Amino acid sequence: MYLEHFGLREAPFAITPDTHFYYCSPSHQEALNVLLVALRSGAGFLKLTGEVGTGKTLLCRRLLNTLDDSFVTAYIPNPFLNPTALRMALAEELGLEFARNIGQHRLLKLITERLIELNAAGKRVVLLIDEAQAIPDDSLEALRLLTNLETEKDKLLLVVLFGQPELDQRLERPRLRQLRQRILFSHRLRPLSAAESAGYLQHRLQLAGAASDCFTPRALRLLHRASRGIPRLLNVLAHKGLMAAFGAGLQRVDAEQVRRAVADTEDASPLPAAWRRPWALGALGTAACAGMGLLLWTAGR
Image (tube, rainbow, N blue to C red; front, side, top):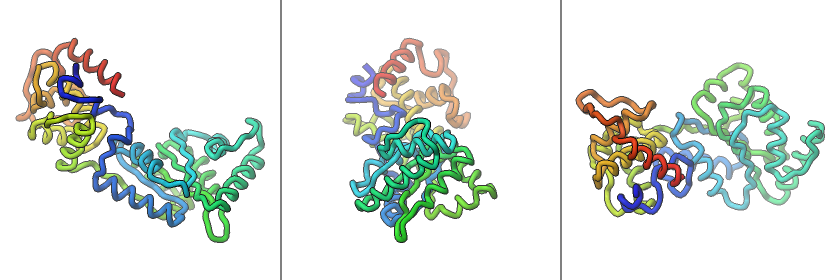
């Protein structure tokens, strides 16, 4: 009923990184351009950082989908691995078969041989690591040593780190200065502006099948203010706003529904007192409306 009420084919604000809903904001497009140009030029080490919820994983997947068949990609989404496990994960991504008790010298030799084989075939190998702020220091050093593998003209392994701002702080440590010096290109994702936030929400609604605006102009302004322009928070607040409007039988989300969504979301920035109003039935109305919204939210993911 949530989707039918607003004329939607699918849930527009699921928090999974679905590239179908990718919104080309200036910051994301600049980041994608930097990464593509750097990888095509053979730059060995790249870094992209951004606050939680700014779309790093979505951009990583967009990059994976954009690279053509001249690239071979390896993707590690959870890099909280020791050096041995990191090398094994890379070997598996490269399609290598090996015994689990293989010695590290032998494993590194297999990886090197595979990289040389792919380079001879005209392929660039790119390792993309998400949540890179979680990599242990010893594994970061192992990663740096892997990028030492090269021919006279080419790096055999290109690496892109996607991480939270804590990654930048870690790389400032003296013990990681050699890795820091290897990073040739870096980019920091910024939150969306007010205009970009409105465009982002309308973009997702249109892709989900909305035939008309589901948010009033004031609701859009409040959503941007409360979310601080962070896409993930925009998704959460917009979903809850639609849920509250549906429960009230409204065709558009107005300021009141956004206030309720903000009150129900811990990480949302509180709205100025002049923009808040008390209500008696809880932040999102009745329990039945909340239960129905949660069910549809889950089904739409």
